[in-house]
Amino acid sequence: MFPQKGFPSHLDLYQLAERQDGYFSARQTQQVGFTRPLLSHHVKTGRFIRVKHGIYRRAQFPESAYADLFVAALELYGRGVFSHETALALFELSDTLPSRIHLTVPPQISRRHPDLKLHTSRLARNEITQRHGLAVTTVQRTLANLIANGMAEEQVRLNAINRGLQSANAL
Image (cartoon, rainbow, N blue to C red):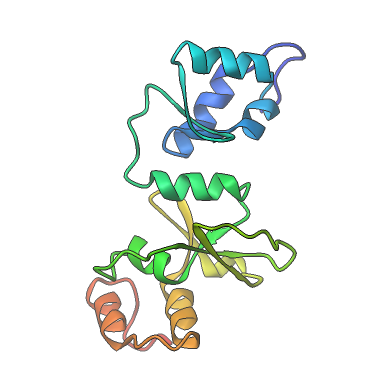
């Protein structure tokens, strides 16, 4: 994924955006050879849609049902994993949407964000899975996080078991 010197790779950007439901960051465009003026040109011509500062969507991709989550992940440069109540919603184990997006980030990240609730922890690889193209804590880790935060989760655990997302003897 390294462009030829002086030439942006539209294919690399397309493939990257495709994995992220059409979304990408300005930083990612630079990594595949786009200059800021070229990025601006594609926004002016309608090829790229500016979603918010530094975050874009390719116009041929429809807006994603998970747009807010892809944008949040890009704002943290992909260093966050959706967790807690957000993970619960992604696994469809809760009927309520959290008021803020919850992500677990490595301890060295101390960035504050008004729309995000950041939790710090070092996650093992086996505590992370993919859901709808997003990095999310596993059901077991999600439930452990919620228990640690004092949330009554017996019904959520039963939902997880009934949907086959967790075995009856897990946790």
